[in-house]
Amino acid sequence: MTLPEVGARSTLLADWARGYESQPNEYACWLEPSAGHIPAELHGTLYRNGPGLLDIAGYPVHHPFDGDGMVVAVSFRDGRAYYRNRFVRTAGYLAEQQAGRPLFRGVFGTQRPGGWFTNLLDLRLKNVANTGILPWAGRLLALWEAAEPHRLDPFSLETLGLDRLDGLLRPGDAFAAHYHIDPACHWDGGAPALVNFGVNVGRNTRIDLYEFDPAFRLARQRAFQIDGFAFLHDMAITPHYAIFIQNPVRYEALPYALGLQGAAQGLASVPGRSSTIIVLPRHTALGEPRTFRAPGGFVWHHANAFEAGDDLVIDSVWYDAYVGIDPATDFRRIDFAALPPGRLARTTLNLRTGAVERRQVDPRCCEFPVLHPAQVGRPYRYLYLAAADAPTGNAPLQAIWKLDLHTGNQQLWRAAPRGFVSEPIFVPRPKSAAVAGAVSPDVGDPLANSSALEDDGWLLALLYDAARHETEVVILDAQDLARGPLARLGLGHHIPHGLHGAFSSRVSWPST
Ligand code: CO
Image 1 (cartoon, rainbow, N blue to C red):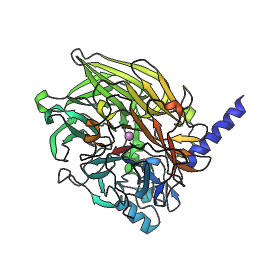
Image 2 (cartoon, rainbow, N blue to C red):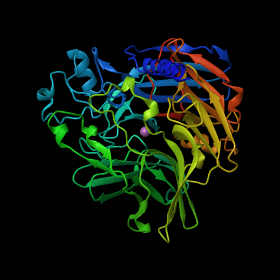
Image 3 (cartoon, rainbow, N blue to C red):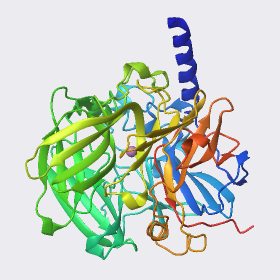
C-alpha cells in the first residue's frame, strides 16, 4: 500500500507546485462560461491579490510570500464578466524587472545572488504588495502588512503609487493586509466602519488601530505598546473590541543581519508557552487594553469574533506551531504530511473571570475563513473556507467547505484530484436587481440591500486546474455547494495560488 500512496502524493505535490509557476503576462478580456451561466443578479467586482512572479528573471523566490504582487479583477454585470490581471508596479518590481536580476532580499528568505556577503547588513525591505486588496470609497489599495499600501486604479489596475492615507501613515509605516469591516458601527450612527491596524516591531511592539468612515476619513485611532516581539497577521473585531492573539514565538535577528537568512526566518514557535489574547477597546471611552493567557499554538487567520454576555468568542484557524521555510528547503518540495494542519477552533474568553477555553470545531485541514459581511463581529451561523479533500491530515486546499456552526452540518465542494482552490469570497444576493450596486460606498451598500438569509448568495473562488494548467473563476451557490459551480469561467492561462481577495459592488466596463 505504501508505494501507490507515495506515488499519488508526489503527483499531487507536482500538481500543486506547478500552480506556483510565475505568470509574467497581463491580460484584459471578456470571459465566457465554459460551463453554466453567470447569475444575472451578480453585480460587482471580485478582486484577488497574490504573488504573480515566483522567480525574478529565472532566480526563484524562496517562499511564495516573497513573490511580486499581482492583482486580478473580474467584474460581473447582467450575466457577463470582464477580466483583468496586472502587477503592482512597486519600486522593487520596477527596479528588478529593469535590472533583470534580484536586487532585494525577501522577508521570507529570498536572498540576492552572491552568497551571504552580498546580503550582509542589507536590511532593506521590499514591499511586494501581494497579500490583501481593499476597495473602499472608490479607492483600491494593494496591501502588504509591513509597509504602506499601494493605490491602484480600480478599473485599469494601474499602479498610482504609495498611498499614505492623506498623511496618516509616515514613510515605512505598516498597514496590515487584514482589515475588517464593521457592518454597522454604533459610534458612527450605524454606518460601516473600516477597521485596520499596523504592527511596528522592534524590541517592543506598537500596534496602531485605525478606523475609517465610508468616505475613508479617519474616524478613530488608538495606539498601544506590547512587551517584546509580536507577529500579528490578522485580528478579529466585535462591535466594541479589536482582538489580537499573540502567539508564543521568539525572534532571532542576527542570522538575518548577517545575510544568512530572511527576516521572517528568524521566527520560531516556543513549545509549551501560552498565547496572549489582547483585547483592545475600539473606543477610548471603553478603557485600556487587557490581556489574557490562552493555550499556545499559532494563528494566521481569524474567522470571526462576537460578544455574548461576558464572553468573547473568537473563531480562528490554529496550527500546533509556526512553520517557516528554512534556507535549505525548496517550498515546492515541502512534505505536507510532516507539517501541522490548520484546524478551526473556537476560543471563548470570559472578560469578567479571565477564563479561556479553546475547543476544536472540526479536524479538517483548512484556511482562509470567510463569512457574510453583515455578520462580521456578530453571532453568526455559516462559515466558508478553503479545505483539504481528506477529513484529517495536512494537505493542499482542494475543496470549498461550508460549516453550519449551529447544527454542525457541513457541505463540501471537491476540486480534487487535480483542482486547487483559493480563498472563497461570499457575495450576498441583492434583495432586488434594481438596487444592486446602486451607489457608493463600495462595501456598505450591498449590505443594506442584501437578502436577510445568511447564506443566500454566492461563493466566488479561483480554481487552479493542474490537468490543463489553467485557472478558472468558479461561482458556487452558497446554499448548496454540492450541486457544483453555477458557472466556470476559464481564463485561458494560470494564475499562481493567491492570498486574499475582496468584492466591491462597483463595476466598470471597457468603453469599447
Ligand atoms: Co492572510
